Length: 192
Image 1 (tube, rainbow, N blue to C red):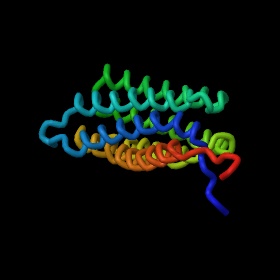
Image 2 (image 1 turned 60 degrees about the horizontal axis):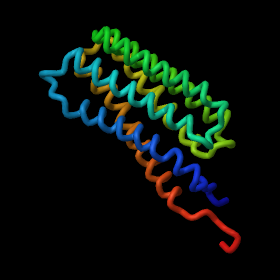
Image 3 (image 1 turned 135 degrees about the horizontal axis):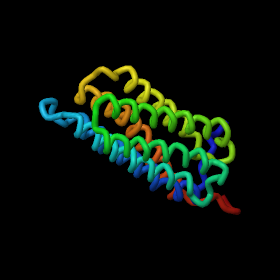
Image 4 (image 1 turned 180 degrees about the vertical axis):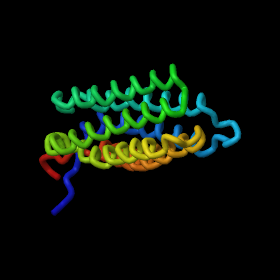
């Protein structure tokens, strides 16, 4: 059975938000890897994770509001984006390890569950949603790891969050490059 190809017009619409989400995750992952342990504190953890959450929410919403995306999923993605933005605000105003870990875990778990729901309900109607199963489970895993590490220091929590971001970045980069490739392919015509 041949693989189903995403139409070029749809791929072009969602490639940029997926690449933006990948770049945001990669940037946060790199920061979490290379930030020196001696200077990692609650503020570094809170502000970097808050920025990651808010910027990711923006690209998640851009993805859901692509012209060809089903309107019925916008509420689910809006819920995920709002959870991430609220978590970012909580982290920015309460940069304490425990608060940051709970806020980050909550946002990732909510977003992960909603992405899995999008996959289950809407993958047949919009081919790019096939990727939401992986991003949903990665988000669930990142959220669960933060919950399991509530007693850890800021550097360790930064590492846990960064680990989830690394996995998300790799998968989203693969997806984004696949979408860019599909966007460049000519649509099959009458003579092809």
